[in-house]
Image (cartoon, rainbow, N blue to C red; front, side, top):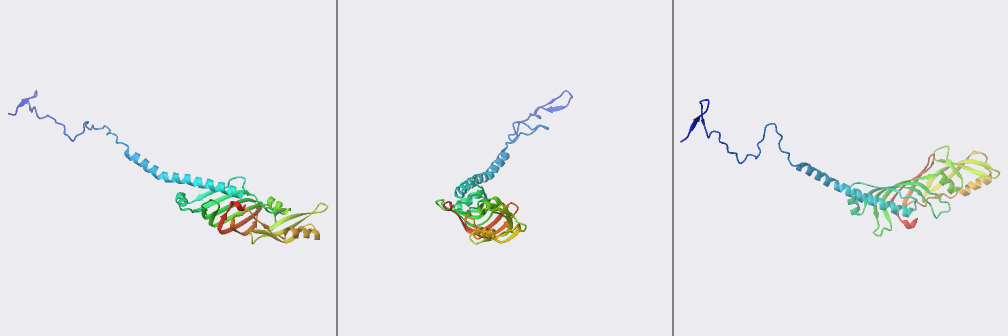
Length: 269
């Protein structure tokens, strides 16, 4: 029999009306209005960080491989060309790891300084040589490296050109011409200009003398003919590069080269 009771205000109430049994689906702690929900584990942030790390890992590995190849290339070039310092080497293109695995580097830039010229009666050092090599491969025994094609520019300072010729050389009054000071007996000197050009065999020729200061006697003319009759050969250039042009600047000569199947052999230096 269901029983009701009367409260103090005279109203009847059911003593089971407010019985409460928590639902099994409700959380242990009820959500209170205005309270903050529990913080979720930072799984998304951790996953994002892991994905970023995985994405950066190949880049880091590639940079390590690139640095090692550049260092070894610089060391080999320095030993082969006899430069006082290792050249600057940059392997271009990403990823380098796959290029190294294939055995061919797509693009390599090399900038070397103060390349000596040994084994020549009139050695002409190269102050700076900049190489852009395409398709660089090396022999299995590391005896040589070969580029499918290459472009290069060499800078020859006027003091080095003067030392090779035994005359004081500077920029001429017109493009493509050099000014030459010739010392004569009795402390006399004559200034002449001459053209400079590229000829076969990676040689620089001097022609078309023109007196611009003083008087050049027959003996002086014979001296110039003897000095300039043989072009100067650039002997410290990698095999396969061909001299295409020579231009005059305020500080020296700029020589441009191109070539295919350009080979670097240390024993040739």
